[in-house]
Image (cartoon, rainbow, N blue to C red; front, side, top):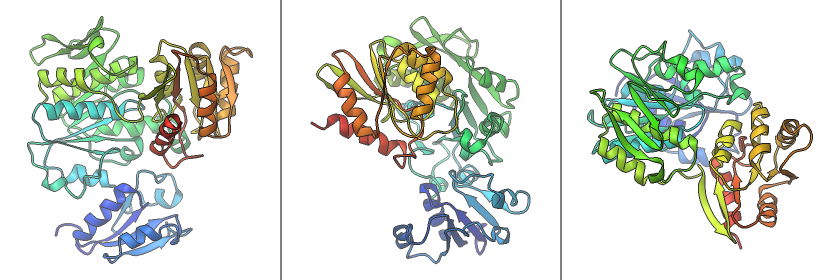
Length: 454
């Protein structure tokens, strides 16, 4: 069965990835203790789903007790690693994750993508470019299904493509063969505490690479540009601002990719892509370069650029109602992402924003909202903080009308009442969903239902 036969393992946090991990470890003959801060009643359904396995359950307030007695502790990405009961494990107990095992067990080359924004769109673009090139590609990590139960059966000629969050990266001691960092801006400071800790987590995507690997960075981002000087593998960059000798760039309205001979080849144009916004120009360049380094062909890359329609919850067009276009950008859980969504439109924008406060600054976001929206409808725990930032940006006299509502249903009703023909109603929250919704997907689906309701 392998290295886990009879080993005492604790799996902390019963999320999607750890559900698959538990079944994998059970097949390997491990002795498993499931740990979660939720109570037995709250996890009744999950416990029933594992009725066929012999598991020890330690739930509720003492879920982190006794972890020093285990051979290995597997942490869910959402579990704060700074908890004292987890920090004491360092150097004393093997601390792992589903992603760590995927990297260890993969026979196929692994490609990893991280960044503060653009990860999912770039991952989906890259996957489509590889598949259109005839390369079997399996997507996992922060999107798709956990790969742990199938990773050992994926053939060496395939590619494993992982979208990786800072939480998934922060304790890794192995990097993927190919690494991409899209950009870095403030995010998840409520968990990481400081930008340095957040950036250090992101760096693990390339930190342990060898010279045989490769990495792609955003040349227009100061933080990722600095990463190019410390990366141990082959480095390529992409830029929307200037040509590059080894990478991809925007030339006028054309996407250009430098091939292995050093020749620059046009692979598409802004007029012939279906993705909105300057941020998606960056995503296209990043994906094209990354997929090419991973084995994709030029014609497949160009075809994907022309035909890719986008990803759900990411500037997703919902409907036109009485001449007004409604867009769902629920993935925008930070001010930087929401600002990129606003910039994607040249028409008047009614912005719906607000939600759980991740302790990020809204100062620059306030400037964008004040400059580029006609109305802003605010809800959730961070509503007051956003309104104050907008008012400061306007020195007390904001350009947009500011409206406060209690929930998303009221926000959509207000938007429908305010909107005029040729306007855009953009749901780009700039915040996490946790004060009102379990995740951004449920939040975005709720917005869609509200817009489409008669």
